[in-house]
Image (cartoon, rainbow, N blue to C red; front, top):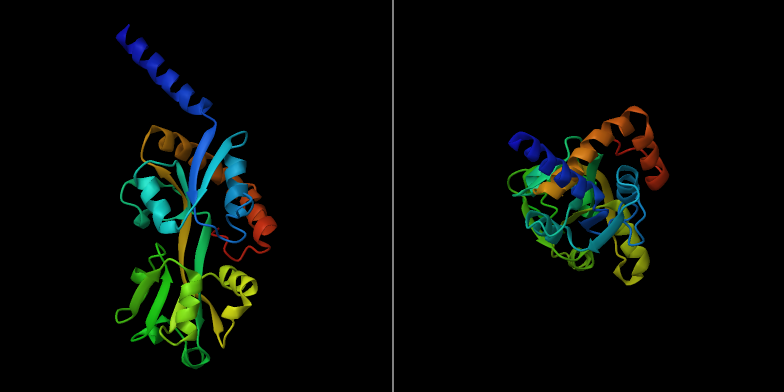
Length: 240
């Protein structure tokens, strides 16, 4: 009798998790990945894995979204890796190869061949991007909350290089032409795999289990690649 009661309670708990159709998400705004209108690669994948759900989305700097997930204030964070979190869990499989581009002066671009050429240089990126471990020893690395601020520092030669994403850099320079300067974009400087990450609680584990069961099917039938092509216009960052 006690065993049957435990099974019944477990089933009721799982049913309650499944019936809760609201998912709380914290994400940075990344062009064509997580747009403010809830379009882009991440949102398309979210809708495919969790259809008929309401998405409660909060846009914020990536570093803050890490804290929100570790504190279990949200259910999912986009574009993360296990090393980013202290108390959260990430999906078993990656959904993209995350590649960082780099904005530099023409002088640095002329002599740049690999990250080793950044030794002794002042390199900056956005808060929470945490590229430090991917850079060689001897690189001075700092993080700022604003891409606009970093471009101003580069223009005034107070830093040597900005690690960020090509789409976001070009979008900002188009929106604010006053930031224009004599810059060179170096593509595919650093890379790592990223995926969806989940809160370390019953709700997060339920969502992760569903994600980990669905993603291999989307890889196998080609749907994940198609989602990337439709939203990004390229499958250069496809991880399979």
